[in-house]
Amino acid sequence: MLKVAKFGFYMFGINTYVVYDPKAKEAAIIDPGMSRKSEFEALEKFIEREGLKVTHLINTHLHIDHAISDLWVKQKYGIQIEAHGDDAPLGKYLTQQAQSFGIPGEYVAIEIDNKLKEGDVIKVGEGELKVLHVPGHSPGSICLYDKADGFVIVGDTLFEGSIGRSDLPGGNHRQLVDAIKNKLLTLPKDTAVYSGHGNPTTIGKEWDTNPYLV
Image 1 (tube, one colour):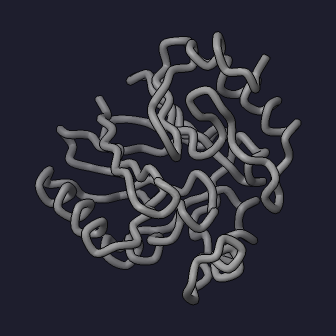
Image 2: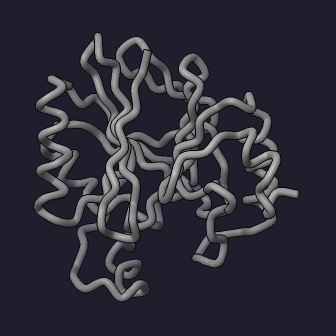
């Protein structure tokens, strides 16, 4: 059984997740958005306290708030950066992304080591995360679905009462809505939804009440 730990960090209120198997002591860090010393320490202390071995670093997409600490995680835990290949251009232009949001500083380009695709299964201990390609917020946006434990981590595709922006480079509103309906709303209604920002929700709640999906 996989568990989910959520960390809320400063940059754009990003949610970083640690998905872990408490028995096998393996973990995946998803969308590392740490930008302050206290945030790095919080994540590191959690990993140490739970006695976890980090085996995966996964990006739901490569916008800067979700990937700003990729290289730190990669180097600290000796693991590869995993993301969909269609987001490779975003990883190469982190500094330009930062400038567009008014964020100071120079950022080293991110190269995807393991290019994920629709249907891939990522093992975390005895648990599994299935890759769902849900483009529209970015070309390579993915969601990570754990059927056995009834949750999906959706990055910036779907939010409580809303959906992701589609006005950023590579975004497409129609594509995003269609992908959400075809890939996410087809999941069981009691599936917990963990978004890249804001509060958790469920597939059923968004099916019934989300004004962008009518």
